[in-house]
Image (cartoon, rainbow, N blue to C red):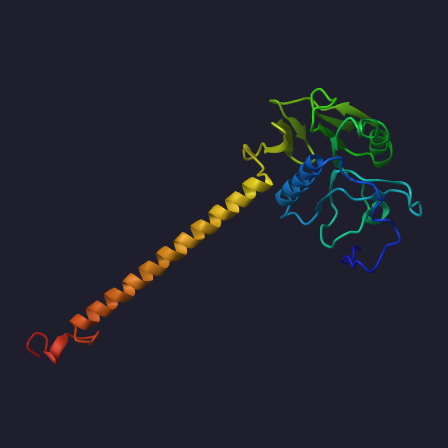
Length: 246
């Protein structure tokens, strides 16, 4: 069971390898944008865990045998509680989807050690590489799916790479890595788009509240006017005159 993370309590496994996780600020921005986008998309599913830029250990007792995927997703693992790292044997499941924001500098690792361990040890179901600077990959976004123990290239569909695990399609859009939802035929919002949507929603709510306030004030003013016409007697005619001669 995952405990709420206490920074003063350790599970005795490292939380960092003391190396920079991201090569450049651009790589880091893309990395965290992808994590944020996927976390929002799966926010209502308590058993889809999305993370990244975190040490993942696969061998109990071996504190050096770890990898740090840029982004990873795993179904069937609760997202509650903050983790200092990810211990596969405790979670009961290895990452199912891994996305690496790759470059010439990390090419050897992303297509070598990581590629082999994701495939052979973790048995990652889908592995995507996004060459942000278009340094060496052609095309600059590529995906692999595990089939009979081998990583097989994922074929593009309408210029996008379908992920069966995510239920989304990955596509390069300018300098960005975007996610297309085939069920809604729409893009998953980026951080900037999401913030703008939240701002618009807040503005619309403010306008609706202001309109409701004005309608309430107008209704109250009309009630006051009618009462004044009736001499302050809401249940009878003014001046106390009888009705129909009674």
